[in-house]
Length: 273
Image 1 (cartoon, rainbow, N blue to C red):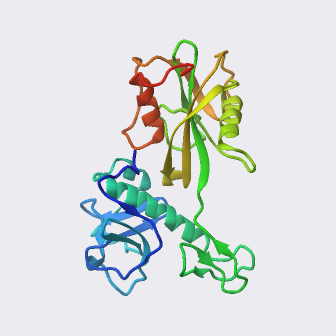
Image 2 (image 1 turned 60 degrees about the vertical axis):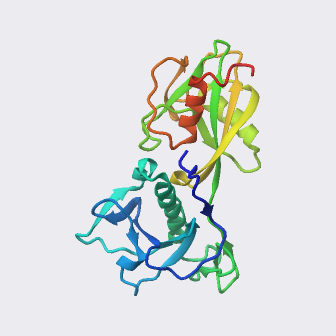
Image 3 (image 1 turned 180 degrees about the vertical axis):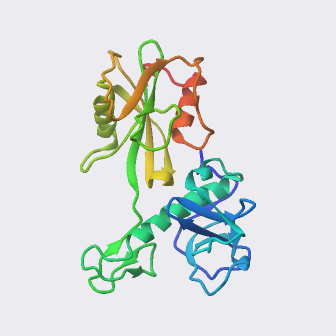
């Protein structure tokens, strides 16, 4: 998965330092990333130091910063989704995590309580209002990914409705947690709402930070006794039961969804177990 970058060590504790020449610098424009023309990232030593450089995090001994990068003939702009496939994976993960923080800072330039300009807190990764003291932390949306199995040891594979973004590959039932809802209750509700299925025997699989949607994902497998589907066409284009040796459309290994489907195809999870 995209966040699995061993042997590298992701260090997100709040310990900012002054940038040095080899540190990596990210620039964004909406959903796009600004890179060098050879599709590599800029380094501090290559940029105008009169700009503000905002510390993000470190990986190993390299620090990563956010700044404004002019779109000149030395730079190109690519949609953030390119980070799903970027090699080395460590830099793709860093890029989309930086974009997560960029969006948070851009959306919170002004205090939601009194309208004053927000400033970096200084003590932690947070924005603080100097007028009323309001503190805003990075937004992280909890969501679930659900692998549903029937008595024939088939997995329910979905495709999202066109209204749900650009992703057109195979998927699993997924959705965001509501206020006051446990992740387990979210699994039951989302599956019922999107497919009309009542699930049992929930078992936790894994989790994943997914900055493309500013989320933390929780993966579960579960079972259904009655596998008759009642599809919510506003959420899903299709939902079909598939066996491990059927054909699948999976784009790379970045996502928790792809890893759960591969886990099923490898025969590592079964109905009732």
